[in-house]
Structure formats: C-alpha cells, structure tokens
Length: 188
Image (tube, rainbow, N blue to C red; front, side, top):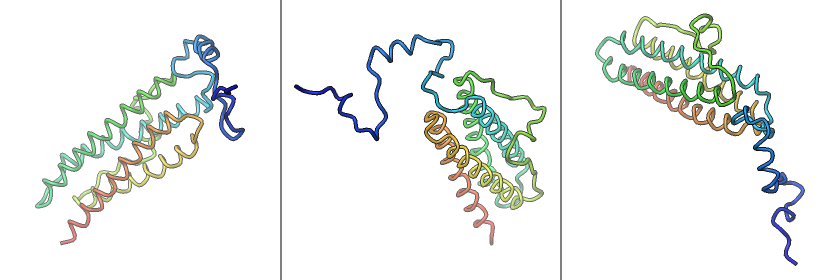
C-alpha cells in the first residue's frame, strides 16, 4: 500500500491541507481578499510599517526631484540624471507599497499632513552637488536599515510583504552604491 505524500511529511515540515479543506477555508471570510486565515502577521502593525515606508519613499521622491532640478556645475548632468532615475524608482517603490497596503485591506496614507513625521528619512536639501549626494546617501542608508528591520520583523509571518520589502531593499542598496560612486567621482 502506497502512502499519500501528505502522510509522508516529517514532523519538522508544516503540514499541508487537503484539497477540500483548502476549498472550504477559501470560501470563509471572502471579504478579506488576500488576507486568509493563514495570515500570521499582525495586519494592523504591518500596515502601519508599510505606511511609514510609503512616507519614506514619498519624501525620497521629493528630495531626489529637488536635487535633479537644483543640480549645477561641471559634474551636474550625469549626477542629475542619476537623481531623476532614483526619483522614478522611489516612486515605483511607493506604488508597490501602496498596492500591498490595499491588498492587506488597509488604506495607503498619501496625506501631506505629517508626511515628514511618518517618514524614516529626512528631507534635507543640501546646498551643493556634493551635499545633495551625501544627503541622498544618508537617506538610502536609513531606508536600508529600516527595510532590513521590517523584513526581520515580518519574517515568515507574511512572505508576500517580506518579498516586496526585500526587493525594494535590494534596489535601495543599489542606490547607495550608485551614490558612493558619484561621491568618488567628485574627489577631483
């Protein structure tokens, strides 16, 4: 007699539900959308964290856009292009975060009221090209640390949100590397 794969699982692996159980659970509380009974994270806390990340991304978009328009000097053209690219990528991050908030049955907070208070990064303008790059680098480093902490907090409780945050984290690390390269290029 051959055993079903569900009965051969070791005690260390999570158990798998049979098809009928999956179907039955899917029909319960359907108004929850993507949030099923298997969702293990504290949804309200995750939404709060995501709204803070959303504010951080919006502040970064605004700072990068200002730097793009204010960049002047002999090295300004390639640096401004990098600022614009980063602004556009930060906007994509904001959109992904807002989309995930909605999937979790929350509301993305785009209100300008209190935006800088919700943001992990500060909005610092910088007076020179070099200062702008440094301020953007500081903001990227803040974002990197806050995303790492959120990923660790969420862990296995919400793999979809964790994956979104990990992908944004990888992009923020690339931004930091880009900015370090720009700074090195200004050491003439």
